[in-house]
Amino acid sequence: MPALSLLWLAVIGGAAWYLVKSGKQTVTAYKDGLPFQIEVKGIGNGATLRVDAADAFASMALNCEIETGQKLEASGPRAGFRTQEQQAALIAEEGSYSAGGLAAAVGKSPHQQGYAVDLNHCDPGKPSLYNQRLHEWVLANCAQYGFFNAGDHYVTKKEPWHYEFRPDLFGVA
Image 1 (cartoon, rainbow, N blue to C red):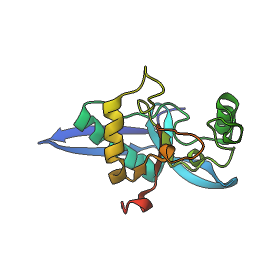
Image 2: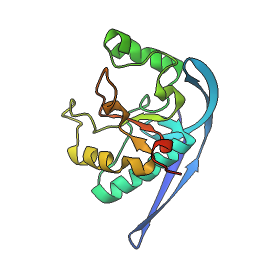
Image 3: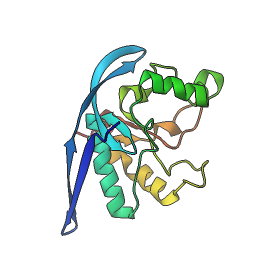
């Protein structure tokens, strides 16, 4: 899949300005198994999010890099929006929640609505990738961009890498 967006950065007098040039794509999303159309765009590492979530993620990633000197990244192509096929493949690899695995049922994942993202460096269970400073920055700052660590709130499994864009919960416009 070709890159869907470009991010230009310019730091002027300590203020960061960014412009996301979008290559939007319309995809079929699913909520409770029912299909609907959304527009997504790239956030890096082959991942996409719903346009509003992608823009908020770009702002969060930019400020994270300015403040920590480290890149905030999606963990790969399936880390954001997922198709039915990608969700089914994940279930085959990781198992379903109902069977004690990590994947929601096909058509039921917030990834399939385009507002969930799995972040690199935020899983203490993967020491080779984990970055405590980066993870602490995200936990402390994600709400101001409309994200929250939804993976830490799930009863069945802890997923410290799983964040969801829910600006309605934080009064973020």
